[in-house]
Length: 385
Image (cartoon, rainbow, N blue to C red; front, side, top):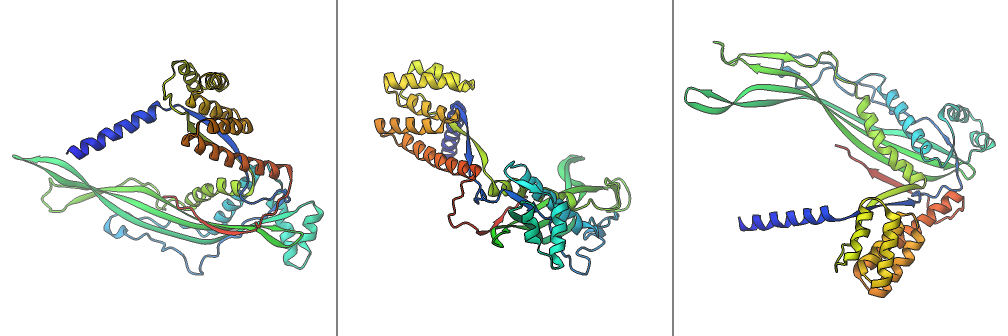
């Protein structure tokens, strides 16, 4: 009991300290994981659909229904493979389009060239004549689905005579649908005909749909009597397509950051006012209000006048929040060399790393090509429950 009390006290202390911390928003430009600065004109082909086995991948009727009086046919549709491919094509197009980094030849046009290539025409040369430098292709490599009915007892407290006890009064039935999908994409250098980058993802989604309730009838002469009440009106289970769309949407942001520079936003805490300096309280208040520029000026003045370590640290951090990263690094370096603080050193190392990544992103945007052994293959597993 004493140990539990100590743990609770520590938890409360952490919560108090966290709630008292003043955080500032920092926004950094980060490079794409792959440097495609030399390949800014991109043709996007439609995603190749998954080839289901010749037999139906799911039974027309869902397992578990035999326990109930309900009927329900599968949510699988014969057109599902094509639907998933269309959703994946939209995902790839949106992923590269929202970066604002590439000029894009859309699938409707790209597919025509790919078709010509399949009958012996020089697809690469034709695309290059349109100014295209790279081709993005993708395919669905794996699809799996599962449907089942699960029942869950509902227990309520009842009073019978002098007895008060918990009793199963009904049972709810749910359709559980699980979808798994693997997607692979590649970006191909048309001039050299080699793969610049190839990545794979696997994701999973699950959905429950309440289909009905079994109500046990205790006031009848027949033991075990019940009444099934249907809650789901349709005779067909919901389509699997929205589940696959959710999986693909989870991939989208990751694909965008792999192929193009993007902004990364984080919240970082100011250093606490210890040793306490009364004059710094106004600066903390300004920072809490989001008035970063005047807060930075005040913190800097207190650092220069008092050599107050938190003020120096916070002045540098606020410069970073004001998107003046080079100035922030210079100031944090000055504070570290003056104080030798471990906290300041850690912040300086983080800032310098951010500075390096930002400069690399700027080179990608400007088109300054730096080859550093890229052109890699990676499998990334993203499982969404």
